[in-house]
Length: 327
Image (tube, rainbow, N blue to C red; front, top):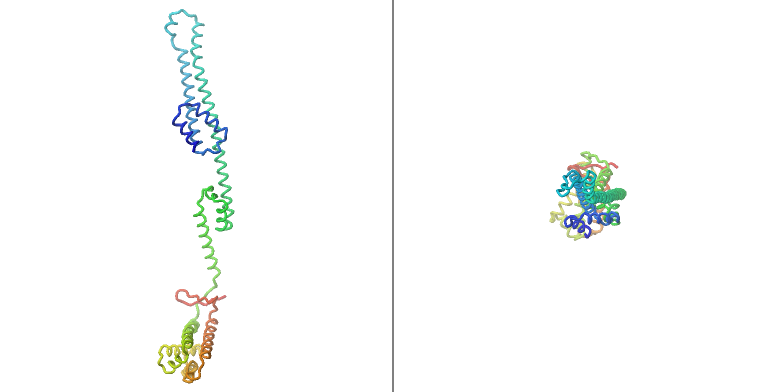
């Protein structure tokens, strides 16, 4: 800055106290609004240096006066017989000759002291203003923080320098608020989760049967949709081992669900014929078979839902154990 360069020139390139004093006087009278506080501090220090210089000049002048008042008369005057009044007058003249130097030094001390004091007051006012501004901005940030991270981001858009003025880093400050919000949200969600308790052994077994048979029935449905006649033929002739196994598994599980225990072999055979029989190869319709399988899926879902009501189809398993949700 031009002002900084001027102060440096005065400090390092000038031995003229009057130049520094004049600059300080003009600076303080103009309130130094555009001058950085660091430059003002330099100028105050420089004025104090010249103030000390002035004080040294005053002391030197006073010492010179004392020496002149007590020094022997010059040789030419000593040879002349002077009266005491004449000698006193001479010595007074010698002492008075130093007065302009002492007076100038005293004025330098007074004026540098005055200029330095004015600038120091400017600095104090400036610091107070900056501190008040910082406090005001911090209050604005605290108010914006009541709206969470969104409120702080709005403040940054409106006043990009707000955090800098407050001596804060906007990015890290807002990130901390967002982390706090995320943690509060997580705790709220955990608090809102329904109470859970373990299923009994029997209920857990029935629930497992009901839920595991549904994907098996869906595989049969897909086979019937793809080629109904071929799938039925493979089941009744036992040539399609995959489909035969699926039918056996579904029949066993349906029997256990309906009986609540061991499967009756006659009931199991009758159920298998309902899924696929020789008559279905000639007269069966895929839509009827698929409708029957959908009914089985609905039956399994109803049993599972009765054991443990589900929230939005969500299954809760913790530590490898199934839990029943209690609303």
